Image (tube, rainbow, N blue to C red; front, top):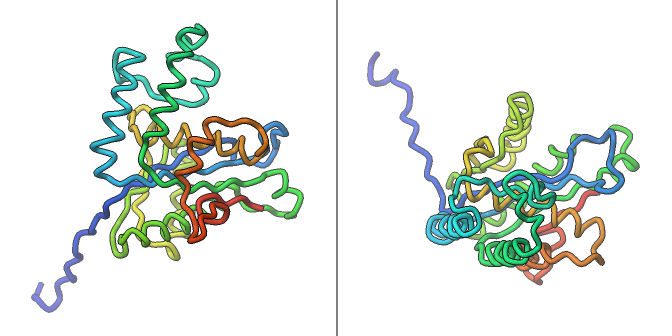
Length: 251
C-alpha cells in the first residue's frame, strides 16, 4: 500500500469534563397504563468528573459503610421504599430514623445538574392514535437538553459518556438503535450500558432521583421531601425557570 492510498488517520476522541448517568422510573409500555403511576420518567444526572471522584464516590462509600458495614450493597429506590432485601432493617423505626436523614443529606450534598423528561402515558394515549415509544420520546427530549447544558459548560467538540443501566440485550439493542438515530442531530455522546451490579455510585444516584420527580408531576401539591431536595439541582433557563429546561413534561 502506497502512502497516498493509506486510510486517513482518525484522531482519538477528546473526552469532556462530565459524565451523564441515566435511569428511569415507571414502565415505558403503554398497555396497561397504571392509573396510580401513569408516567414514565427518564432522569439524566450531569456530573463533573472531578466532583464524581472527589465528592460523590467517597460520600456514597461513607454512607454505605456507616449503614451496612461495607460498600457492596447497591442503593435501589424501589427496595428502599419497600424495605426489602438489604434494606429490610428499615422496618425497625430506630434504624429508619437514622437512615433517611443520612440519605437526604447524601442527595442534598451531591453536586450535579438534573435534566428529567416525564411522559404522561395516560395523556399520550388519549392524544395520539399511534403514540411513539415513551422511552424514545424521553431520550430525544432529554439528550437535546443535556447537550445544551454541556455546551454552556464549554464541552463543544468533546465526547461525554452517557451511562445507562442495562435493561437486557434486546432492549439495550433497541435503545442503542434509537440513540444512534437521535445522535445524528445531537452529537457528542458515547452511550454505555452497565449492569446495576457494577455498583456505580452515579447510576445509584440516578436511580434515587427518578421516582420522586414522577410523584411530583403526578401530584405537585403532595408533600415530597425528596423532590424538594432535588429541585435546586435542575437545569434552569435564564429566568430561573425549570419547566422546559431541566424538566420536560410531555404531552
